[in-house]
Image (cartoon, rainbow, N blue to C red):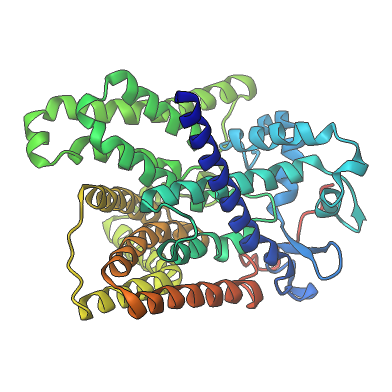
Length: 450
């Protein structure tokens, strides 16, 4: 009986994995025919388009070249003023994923040799493919986690489809799926964060100090892959403090405060240790985000010139941030507003269960630290602000579910058909529309390092 149950569970998980992989391929493969930027503007957008077979081509971000070089020889991370020195685990993962591919005979690799094309030559570069595998794994994990967040029984259910399509098809995946880069983490981090908060909430009363330390360390090591995991840590600490309500916080304020502090201290520990190791070996530690872009430390720079300068710079930067947020949340927010309006128009009763409340609170736990983190960063791009979209998509999916469950007959069929049509149109838009092409570099040349 137990063996039969395990076999059934395994078959169910394999089927879900297959469907998720198929959906992912349907979304990302068409990006190989996306419109190209004019050749004379490639340097302007810091990008190159490399032809594969027939109409297929890949968009190679200029940062990809250095990432591949580092993955070939991770010891280069210790070079003075190495741009990726603060993100060593991302390079190590690319290096590790490339190893199994590198031992394969080139004739067995097939199209991978075409994907990893540099200059005018086609050369088999396993590290390029390793980073593509990482992108695929991140989107696959995001898909499976998001399905569980929605509480959907199927990835292909009508009320799951639209949020999933938006999650997978957007400017982040269009620009960065087929090239080595860190930006796919802007999809994974929010989904993983909200999943963590949903897991933590019913366990807050029984969480041990050892478990809290482990959570902090885990997120801390993840921050050595991508810095936005700091948002995950902030939300987790906030969850410990207020996840059981204000009354529980008042009753156990010392214990909760200590656990929250322990989580944050554990989170910073891997970065401190890595910085100490690099400093001990090379004599200095370099953070490109701080030195080049003055991320977060711009607050101190402005304050050193007076409180008025700080207020002026803060107002200007928050305005820039709000503008980037507005660019990416327009469609999901309009879709959410439309669904809510329809729900109110047909008088659907709203009776959220405990799981719905837990998910909504997880959204809040992510959004608040994310806005604080991104708003004070001092470096603003739509691709970074896009990490707020999955939170909106989760609420959208929950609202669509309530609407679909409440309707019957032709009305329910009309809702399902509308969702499928909107999803198809949205997907087609991102495949065939011009741009976005990349971050404007004002004439910065594409680096040819291979």
